[in-house]
Length: 143
Image (cartoon, rainbow, N blue to C red; front, side, top):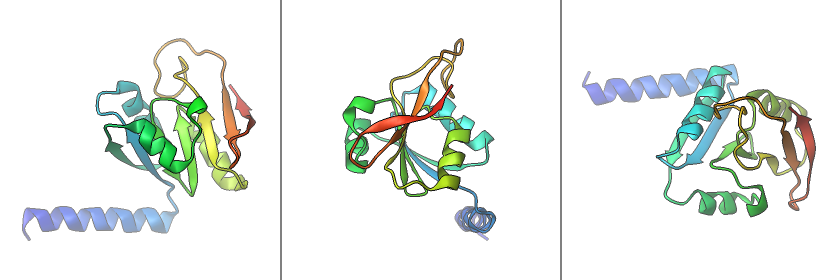
């Protein structure tokens, strides 16, 4: 087999196994130069998510396409299970969202909170917000 065919076969097999196991798939839109975004991707993988990461030149444009309000901005935006995830949301919060399946847009941790997944430094208190389709928010989890 040629090397490209081997790689394609491996990718297809990996995707098939992930789908069969019900592994949550995450698609992330981030800047190529953002180290904390890569840290969050690592956090998600560590907790069993299959992550596809896209380095984009305009993360804000991707966020707007997905409907996440600008006032909830962080450094990366993701999609998982039909939901939009903004910022350094812990994997456990996303798993809870996927289990409970509320009729909402998604979750957000606005800004870049020190100590949240992917953000180095001492842990600071923060909230993961549940974002309704109309852009309103409520606290989903306090950390």
